[in-house]
Image 1 (cartoon, rainbow, N blue to C red):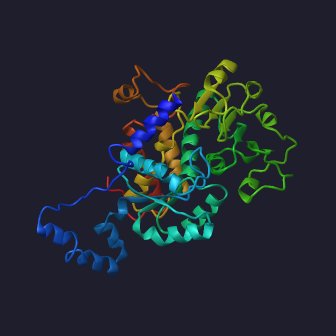
Image 2 (image 1 turned 60 degrees about the vertical axis):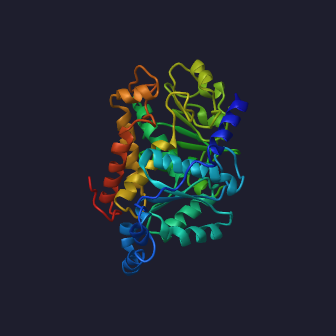
Image 3 (image 1 turned 30 degrees about the vertical axis):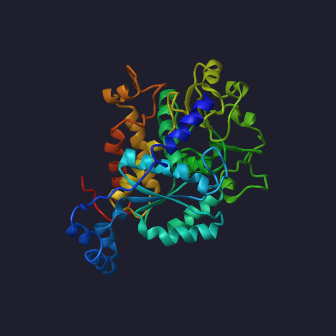
Amino acid sequence: MIKDLRHDALQYHAEPKPGKIALHISKPTNTQRDLSLAYTPGVAEPVKAIAANPEDAYRYTSKGNLVAVISDGSAILGLGNLGALASKPVMEGKGVLFKRFADVDVFDIEVATQDVEEFITVVKNIAGTFGGINLEDISAPRCFEIEKRLQAMLDIPVFHDDQHGTAVIIAAGLINALEIQGKTIDQVKIVCLGAGAAGIASMNMLTALGAKKENLFMVDSKGIIHTERSDLNEYKAAYAQNTSLRTLADACTGADVFIGLSGPNLLTPEMLKVMADKPIVFALSNPNPEIARDLAMQTRDDLIMATGRSDYPNQINNVLGFPFLFRGALDVRAKCINTEMLVAAVHGLAKLAREPVPPAVLEAYNLESLEFGKEYFIPKPLDARLRERIPAIVSQAAIDSGVARLELLR
């Protein structure tokens, strides 16, 4: 099966021509007049207009619908630090998803440096080309500084999807899972295994939604993040607990929620058994989760579970977030994607999953029925309602929070 996947994947990327994305021309080029307007001498007119008023770049160029997907290849999804060039298939793939789900155009850019200052300088100097910047597959903790500094420098959205996109989908799923299990976010004990970009951002999002820091236990490769450790960066230190607990097993005792953003088979049945009644497990390591779904369901019959896999129910998939977050931001020329916009997306996604599922979605997934409950509490990626609703919700949040430069035109 692995051999077949490798063959099919390489063939898919190589044929009928290499890569997954290409440019197309959006204006007529059939006559000499067309060409004189597209280039010289006609092109001089929008050049002069933009020089006089930089905002006219949105009127006369593709800037307003163009996102840069940028990586240094230091944390390629599940593969680690393989360098900028090796990240290009992933960045092209991100471009495919942007276009397929939200009609956002993408240039993928692979930056051959892992020096923070050099990377920031490159992005800052090319940012004028784009309506938004999607940072991708950059290792922690460097990704936090890079994003924070670029956000301060630029007046367009700068968004690290490995952080905030993951956090939005986790939060939307968790809101609904808690409702199904009869629990509230301000009362539950949450264990997060994995303290990298996704883990930190997810805990930030959950606290924004009402989770209490004293109920959040983050665990990295050295155990529970606690106040007596001297090896914590500032981002981990923000979640250090004053506790005598030290191991993942300790943290799981009495826990209501387990969120895994780490590696395969790290949550044992014994750990699952000591969690609270009606536990919630998001085992998101891909392709092999922190605990196999079948094993988890055999261990606890009162369990609700999500994974990162498309062949199981309740897939936590970033494609539910980033295309629509950027679509909403671009539609109102937002200066950033702020917490208010992220929270709006969380609630929009959670609400959508509670509504009746259209026949077209059932057909796309070859299902006879699907309704809100343990086997379905996060929308399916091919649900056309995502494109209809989530961008508008995000746009309105941008307007309401004062970061939009346009009113919503629909």
